[in-house]
Amino acid sequence: MDTTKPSLVTSVKMGVILGLLYCVLIYCQNQFFYTNPLQFASTKLFCYLIILAGIFYTGYLSKREMGGYITFQECLRSMLLAIAILELFYLVFSTLYIKFIDPNFFDKLKAAWEVYFVKNNVPDDKVKESLDKFNEARDINIWGLIQSYGFAIIIDAVFAVIFAAILKKQQTVFENHIEQ
Image (cartoon, rainbow, N blue to C red; front, side, top):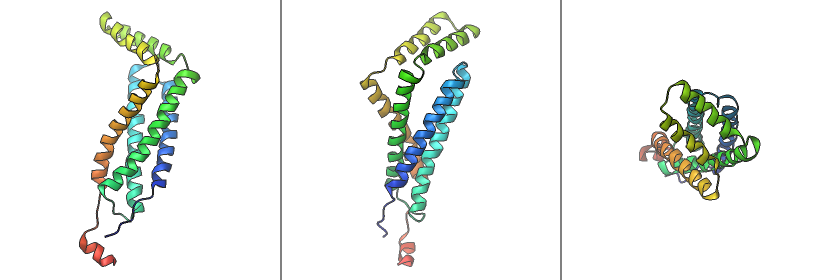
């Protein structure tokens, strides 16, 4: 049976490309869609779907690199490497964005959500509870960043497991015998 493994260079390249793409998407989302909570949430979902498609594509490229045959573990490994890199880009960019690029982002977002809540007659206790979360989110510390990074990888890894199960294809004994 063929024992070659997919090159991790493809995974690293895709991780960097997806990480940079994610940074651009998040920047655009934060700059243009923060004023409306529904638009903000829908663009966040749209951006994440693009990233998931990129993760799937990473697995597909690894499979293609292997001649159309890849094990579940090889496929998962290539996607997990890309995920670790892209989520690191996201974490660093988000931290830099909140600390240096737009330090008033949470204040603007909080004000927009408050207007939305008042406009939609949300009860005051729910408004206060929701707005208090903005104050908590503003506080960035190392432990919170580590937890956020780990949580993001876990969520993405769940999708990677599903994608690897879809993409896996091993050579049968008959196909392997014909190639030799």
